[in-house]
Image 1 (cartoon, rainbow, N blue to C red):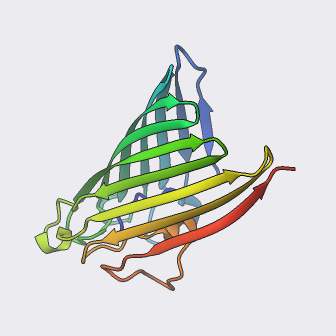
Image 2 (image 1 turned 30 degrees about the vertical axis):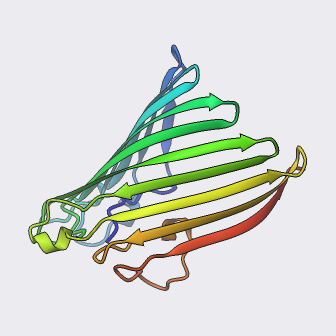
Image 3 (image 1 turned 90 degrees about the horizontal axis):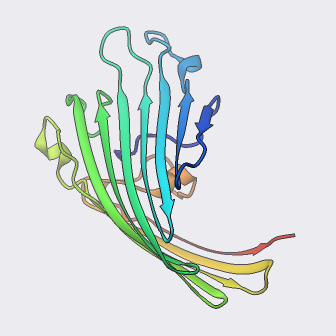
Length: 226
């Protein structure tokens, strides 16, 4: 039921990154996505396109990212498209320390997500990320909120589809090459939503997470650079 646009690592991708002009550059990407695996009754016209424009100006940075994941069009019916936009801005207020804000907006068009009869379902959210370094210790915390989706033909399909996420992580640098790490991630889903970290392969659930479930992830690690 998640409204994510379904773009992870894409094979068969061509990408162009522009030079940096006055601290600003752009990255354009294209992938034929699932064209080669088009099922019977569908055209081979699926694709993923992406555009990022970003800039760094002294301690401040910003960026806008756009991505669209278009499905293979059925012989009868409309092409499904999932589109996402993300705006971000950050400020480096000290060496190794920054605070960032972001806003996201996604649209599922003719995909059947949340509501099989709606032609367009939208959802937006926002969050804040904080990082700070204290000598050999670094900490990161972030909080985000995804609001209820809108556009469902049946209003009940979009009701209680919000999510809140918290993350806290820390790293201790034992030396220039070795560090210890620990983190905790918590999802709080409304009764009609089931966002989880399964896209990163970090789920103990077989199949689909139940609506209203609140998954947690935690871990520890050690890193050494040879």
